Every structure is written in C-alpha cells, then in structure tokens.
Image 1 (tube, one colour):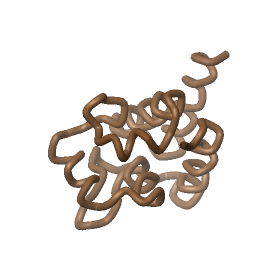
Image 2 (tube, one colour):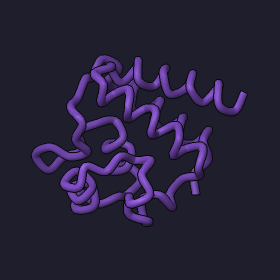
Image 3 (tube, one colour):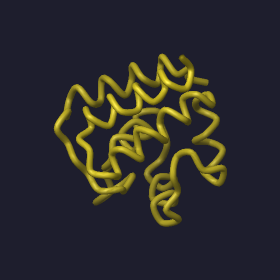
Length: 111
C-alpha cells in the first residue's frame, strides 16, 4: 500500500512530464490513460478495463464504490489527496495547478 508521500512523488513525476495538460474528466480515452489520475492508476498496473468501468459509472476516486483492487493500492490520506487532485483537474485546472491545489489541501488537513 502506497503512502501519501509515495503517491505525491509518483504524481509529481507524471505532472513534470505534462505540467500544462488540461484534460476532460475521463480516466481513459481511445484506449489510453487520459487524466492525471488515470495515468497514475495505469502506471500502478490498474487495467484499462477497470479504468473504463470507472469511467462508465462516473466513479470519483474518493467514492466507496471504486473497485477494491484500486482503493487497496494506497492509504486514506492518499485517497483524499487523489480526490482533491481529480476534483481540481476535472474543474479545468492544469495538471500542475491541480497538483499544487491537492498538496495545499492536504497540508491544511494534516497540518
């Protein structure tokens, strides 16, 4: 199970490659990971089929009905961070801005 620090480090590496990316709220598009959380989950080994299922049912990473094979990959603080990241990105933020938002939100949660 990944800790918050590990998740942030992996997300930072993804964001560094495409800091100005602005993508619609889809985990997968045209058979490839699309949003920042979709890319992250794919790199962790979550299958395209699972990501497509999550898209079809419009699952937000913080929801309880996200498949257990996804939520068991990281701890509760990480799920909160990923939820904030996803919410910001889905609202039209660049990946870099979404990462900064989620990081600031976590600092306010955990002090």
